[in-house]
Image (cartoon, rainbow, N blue to C red; front, side, top):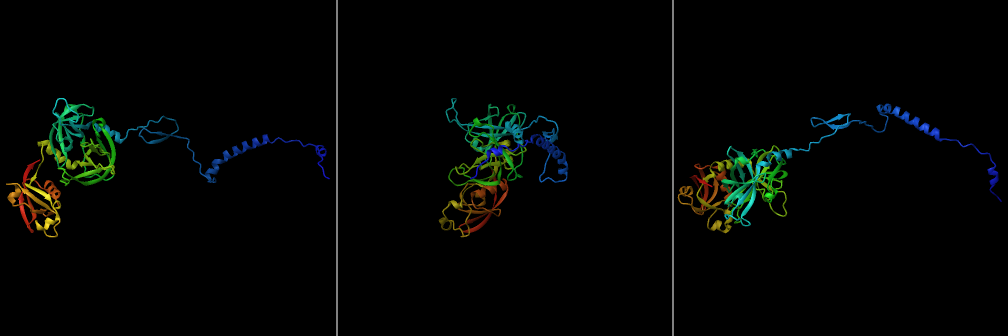
Length: 405
């Protein structure tokens, strides 16, 4: 039977307990000192399995705006002014509100202000300042007022407007105006180039609103229906941008990063499924129209003296039975009426003649015909017309006259 001899254990001699605390602390301190002393040598010899980078300096902003290293702690002044804010500050006073007043009573009834749009002051003389806006902004107005950047409203004189290019020119007192915007060029614009749109979306309450975007497309063609019959009367060539353009922005400024006017905001695609597609009239196209309206208040264009409709508007059944067109003719402009003693009458055009070419350029519809005449010809010039009459192809020469619009 075994047992535990407690008394025998207790009777063994006791060993003296050693104190390890002090040697441990001393050894740790000595080890740290040795590592610190050896660390530079190890780093220079690339014997460490990792990289150590020392940075005992603070990064401060230099006088030239760049970053400089400094051993001293300095306060950093950050300049938050950007190119965009500089442009807006310089040009915002040149963008105004345009108020279309159609009422004639002293006490204006609700709705007598037909609408508000935007305009851009593009020129100043000692006496007058000149504002460009859209034709549809001032259309039908009995009186027009311009709302300046400070909110003051002054009377404006309509010098003239053009339906086809959707442009109008106003004149106001120069004493109330600080500056005019600089005109740029739209010909060399690049897709993706940043732009700003400034105007009065949804009315004067949001006057001077600024939106930013890019050039989304150049030389876009947008059909225009002026008489509301569902048939396009004209093709507008415009700049496409994704800068927000809303009702009231019409006539406002599209500006490049040099602070120059490159377009007149005109329209947008207003559909629930569409976002960020706005259009502006290129300034290079607008300049000659603006100059003509400023000079004499009208646009003088070549004149034929005919009423015309696109061949596509006529049921194809009549193409063969009435017009007797060959099967390979599927486009053209059909003469509807001929004004007496007009260039068309003198040249010999008749009702139901189908014009298919002007000076050898193919004509598919009314828009093609108007575009060619208005953009390629001048009053007094001759124009060769190719047409079909009773199935027979003929050519005549017409002397264009002038007509004011």
